[in-house]
Image (cartoon, rainbow, N blue to C red; front, side, top):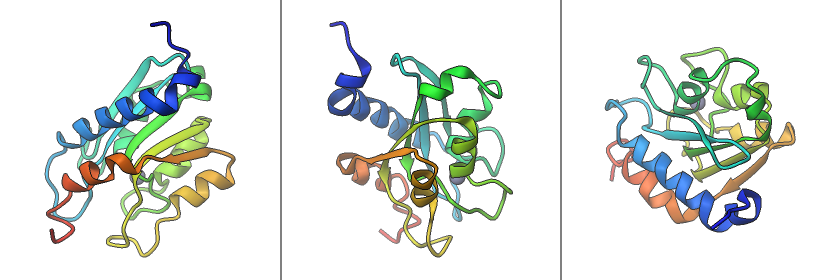
Length: 159
Ligand SMILES: [Zn+2]
């Protein structure tokens, strides 16, 4: 039916878009030293603007970065968009100067939905959520999909 994405979002839309991100995370080239993550960027009207996954465009890509790279700089649709990521956006990283949280802030995206918080495995404490919230971005965690997001990374988690 005619969906108001704002009102329908949290109940059904958010879970469906995050489930799509989990699907994308299964496409990641395998790595022994980095998580496999999927990301979907959805506009205010519920249109999928871009998708990405870890190591999609180059060996060091993060999912959110790959999805953002497919959109023009300053795309006005990003100002009303939501990023769905299977993993909390990184707040620091070794391979690039700007972590995904900074890229999301710079893009003007107001809302982020994640399935899973980064475990202290590759960086001591991921400050991604803190960075986003300090910038006024709403961060929503949907633990319903945390197991699915983790399962793609079971080889890194010793389970
Ligand atoms: Zn990242």
